[in-house]
Length: 213
Ligand SMILES: [Zn+2]
Image (cartoon, helix red, strand yellow):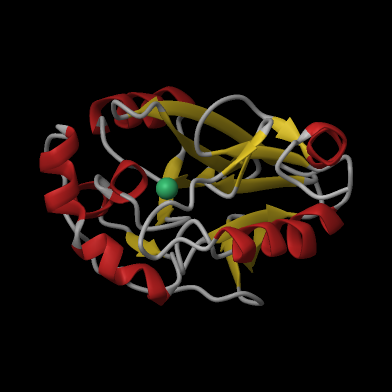
């Protein structure tokens, strides 16, 4: 049995799935994509009783990253991820937050950018990092292979894929990344997307209309 547990906290007007992922043996955890609504995130942290070790970001969009700077400061933890190629999107967070009415949004400079092939650890857990660009250039996916779960951010959704209608979006690159890196994780791998319900690689392989078959 892997000592892993996950809780999802929907945040921001975009109902973004911020997740707490923790090691039940050490009770150390990470907060992934704290886009906002820090009160809700803090309550969830208190409820679970975990000690937050670090903050992870899948990508730089406002609904995923806008609360990272403040939460990191108040918890005294570091921010790791996304890929460095997303920094220009992170830098644009204050402007995007004003546009979409997300309060207390701040840009952040991660303490560590992450790249494919590196790992992040929390307690006794190790997460592998995949680079799946196209939605944003520095988008990462965090995978725990032992238990078969992937935090996929805005790459793959139940029945859909991330939007690519940004100046920096690339639909072909996104599909290539999903097909080349996510689908091979295996049918039983559970995917926790940045928005909407949980799904699995097998379900998306069978039913996702955006994926080639
Ligand atoms: Zn996004």
